Structure formats: structure tokens, C-alpha cells
Image (tube, rainbow, N blue to C red; front, side):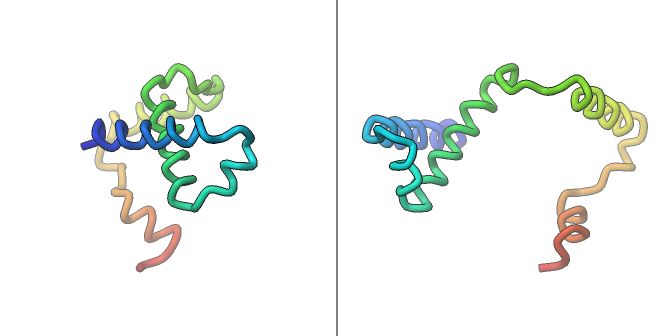
Amino acid sequence: MYASLRTRTSACLSDTMHAVKDLSELLQLPADQRLQLVEAIWDSLVEIPEAVPISDDVREELDRRLAAYYDDPSSARPWHEIKEELFGPK
């Protein structure tokens, strides 16, 4: 599923980029096409995690949180609980 979506999104990105001569042209695209462009860029970064720099402080915090989870997996909370706490119920 993701590979198919990635292929379609990459094709859209490729077509769009060939037609764009200036960044301001991208900002004139309809919202759905700009969203596809953002998704394609995000997917390209996810495929190469080492391309996204993470500071030592952030890496240490992530390592600390992961270790805390491994020490006590029951301390984790599902995303829907966190989201409701932050944004309220739907």
C-alpha cells in the first residue's frame, strides 16, 4: 500500500517539479497538490533517516524515553489518550 502511494506521489512530485521554475509557483498549487508534495518530501526523508540530523541533546532524550519504556512498558499511553488530553474529545 505505502509503496504504491509512494510511487504515485513520487510521480506527481516529478511532474510538478519539472513544471516549476520558481518556488513561488509551488505556493500557487492547489492545496491537495501542495499536500502531495509535502508527503513526497517527507517520504523521501523517512527513507534515509541519517539524512535528517538530530542533535545530541535530542538523541539523548529519545534514548532516555525509549529506555524508560523498555523498563516499564505499562507506563506508555495510547496516542488516542494523549490526543484527547491535548485537544479534547471529538
